[in-house]
Amino acid sequence: GQQLNQSPQSMFIQEGEDVSMNCTSSSIFNTWLWYKQDPGEGPVLLIALYKAGELTSNGRLTAQFGITRKDSFLNISASIPSDVGIYFCAGYNAGNMLTFGGGTRLMVKP
Amino acid sequence: NAGVTQTPKFQVLKTGQSMTLQCAQDMNHEYMSWYRQDPGMGLRLIHYSVGAGITDQGEVPNGYNVSRSTTEDFPLRLLSAAPSQTSVYFCASRGSMSGNTIYFGEGSWLTVV
Image: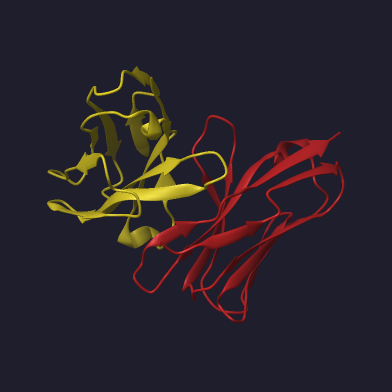
């Protein structure tokens, strides 16, 4: 199956720091999605990106759809304790199948 | 405000037992899918359905069956449970009016011993 390589796998940061994570693929995706999953819950959509080069913000979160359509990044500015969780990238290919990255586990020190 | 409802939340099975994970959505979504989530693996697609009466295999379909007799329901059946099927299972749905937004259930934690 298609692979989405998400990095880093985990991050342990100080409250107030900015966070950056990214996803890369060997295949082109038509849509990139970023999800957050809290413990014991299902993933919740944070940001959806539909066009190459698109930069979209949602509060302290900013995500970009790479120009090559093979990558995307998510930034979180001024992290707070409730940002703790697992962040997943996901992408739709031309066949409209959704593939998920392996996740980035974010831990925040108060 | 139900969205996607999955049951049971937790289940322990013995190897060889069969069981069905239930999934229902009340948003009239055409597309429904089942994922499994293993540590460090992200979510992997098991089976999906683009509408009532239509199902197809995802990335990891072996050992699982699905059916879609109604728009609302998409049960996942484990025919003969194996320890390798110990995982967290998520049902999800998406509608043509919701764009590419997928709505997930809260998950079902399955342990096969």
